[in-house]
Image 1 (tube, rainbow, N blue to C red):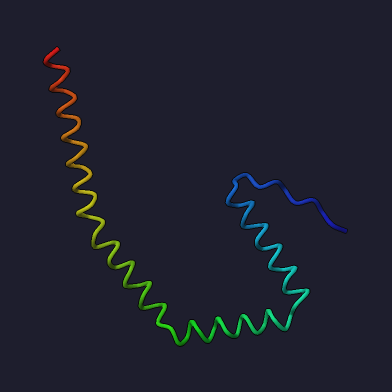
Image 2 (image 1 turned 180 degrees about the vertical axis):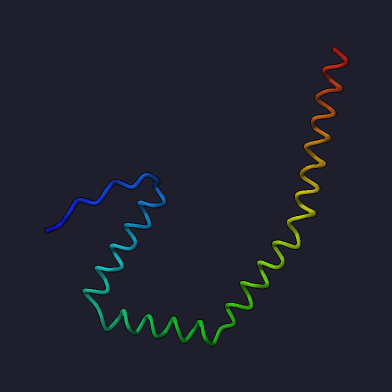
Length: 90
């Protein structure tokens, strides 16, 4: 007996649930292709240095985060000072 699933509260959640449902249907219809695809992706991930690339990107992102936030803070401070300067002139 199928039970009705609750409606997704967010569009991304709805898309994810739809993707999961389609994936499950594909695996049930084409099990050999699904296993082959899983084996192929597993081999690709083991041969391709995905972990090193992802960890390098995270390291780069977090090393650039502090200077970027400092620049954004400086810009916001400048905008606030200009706004207050314009208000004082009036």
